[in-house]
Picture (cartoon, rainbow over the protein chains, first blue to last red):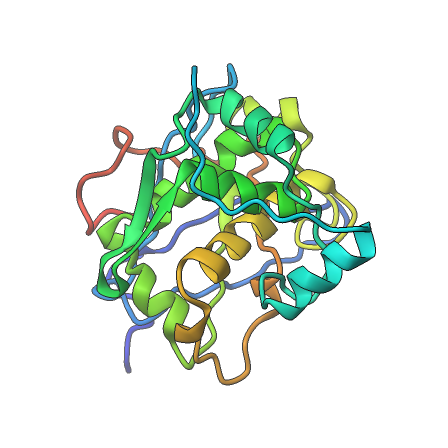
Length: 52
Length: 202
């Protein structure tokens, strides 16, 4: 058996979408974590707060 | 603040002529764009208080850099409102971090698209959708912010490097807000921002 990811913490869970049904989507990364990893960055300016 | 612009100034006799020029120059994603006037670009830069020549990131492998001015130009073209621009800037800074591997992501024959997930109170302020049809059409902020990032990568990052075999519809736009009114921890946790560890996700 080949693992899809090397560790559970490498799966990001995000909640979004409408309330009807129980739908989910799997959005893979590209090339493995050594090629590309998700990056979080703060939003600055415009009097706003949040993260990307 | 006195601004020094690097972009060329183009003049057209009509809006249609401007659109045709942008299409024929390869500066669009195939859809019409909003002409980036100086007034509009200036308004976008005002939201982030950055000089036009501020470098937001780049693709070192291609010797390409993204300035605030050119990012704003493309954000205007994408149909953004000025209040969306801080998100575009943050997204651009994020994807140009080494851990993201932007060169490979945007060149791959696999045709990967870049997904922007935004969270925090800002999403409500600018009307970024986290609910029904979150990946679908109809929301200006979702559509324009994702499109802005793609146009920046297309026009400033070197479209000639994109070797996607099949491509991906997310290459038109791919931006969503996270629904944070739940039991799940928001995506930007755990850990402090920005994340210096390329092995950490979120």
